[in-house]
Length: 204
Ligand code: ATP
Ligand code: MG
Image (tube, rainbow, N blue to C red):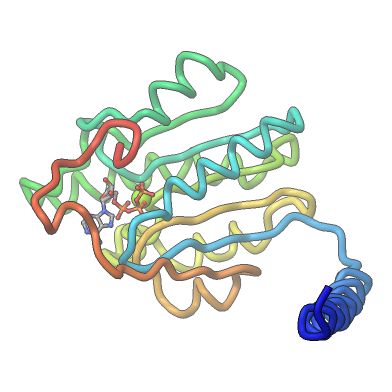
């Protein structure tokens, strides 16, 4: 081994030792054991698919999972097909028909949002659920379809051991303030803008 290689190895070993000490100290300092609230926001692709990654993780430990999607139900998605067919133990509810971006039927939209929120609230009140996914919830707040205080209180006052994941662009700073983890997915580029069609298994 040359002197140069030996020096590089030694430098690397010392850097790793220092990093390990820092990681160990952080692990020791994080001693609160409770459910976490996660907000996945931003303009890039990856929010809902990340939430469904957590669904898979939770199911790996036989945890009880509930998924509420605040979207209209015309476009099927792989996650919906899979959960409905293969995971009867996962509670799944989609806002579905009645929600009409197209017709601008505000009263109808609010009724659909309220109906869907009632489902979400029931899960956030039920300590049997380990993980609750509120997919695309932020739009209900952005459009004022749901009362923000009511939504934030239900999330904040959920059972101690329950985790909740909220996805969607925006949602406001009050929502960010109450969440434990907030990640912004940044749009650097997306295939769609180069004319590539949305793809099964990737986009829906
Ligand atoms: P995904 O479900 O793929 O994780 P997402 O939840 O981050 O995406 P949404 O805003 O919910 O994003 O939109 C879902 C659909 O829109 C997906 O088909 C996704 O590929 C597409 N999409 C997401 N971000 C962009 C973007 N910046 N430009 C174009 N299409 C996008
Ligand atoms: Mg999404």
